[in-house]
Image (tube, rainbow, N blue to C red; front, side):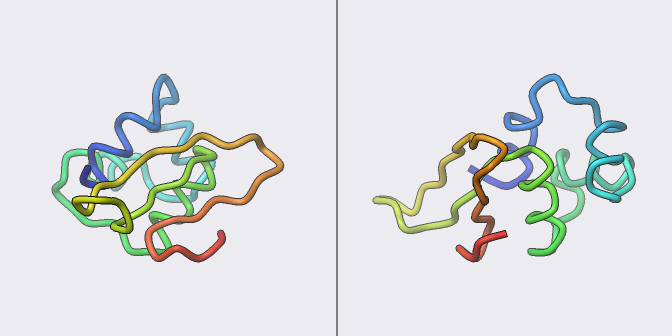
Length: 85
């Protein structure tokens, strides 16, 4: 799953405006990430993961797949490079 697809699924009913407030990334830029028109840096992807309280993992699974995992607010997320964020 590409990060753009992941972001759309993970965002759920949270508006781009709300996600923008949570991350400090403009709603326009977030929309570009979701549409696949721009690629998020690791730092931006980590900020999005933190704001959505999810994990996005690249590779490490059979077939190189990715998965989405929701967390309780007290837990840390791992985003893109496997580091805790």
